[in-house]
Length: 129
Image (cartoon, rainbow, N blue to C red; front, side):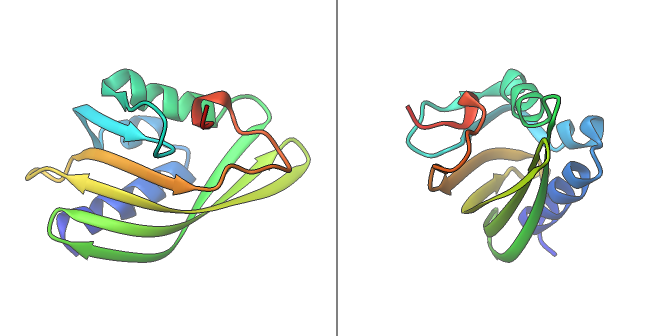
C-alpha cells in the first residue's frame, strides 16, 4: 500500500474503533476539509476536532465502509458507504471522498462528494447551505 491508501485504511480503522486520539494524528496541522464539496473549506486542527465531535454527538454514531479505493500518487479516491446510527434509526450516506497526503503520509486534504439526504438531517456542519 502507498501512503494515501494507508492513510485511508487508518482513517477508517480509527474512526470505526472510536479511537479519537489516533484518528486526529492522521491529519496535518493545516488540513483542509471540503465536507461536503461546495461548502466553505474547513481548515486546521479545529476542523479535525469539529469533524469528529459533530459526528459523534450524543445519540449519533457513524461507521465507515470503503467500497473501493483507487490510489494514484499521493491521492486516493474512495467510494464510501457511511452508516449512521441516529438514535434508534440506521441511515446511509453514499459518496466519493478524495484524500491527499503529504510526503509523511499525513492527510492534507479531504474532499467529500455526496447528495444531501432528505429523509434525515445531518449535523449542520456537514450540510450544504
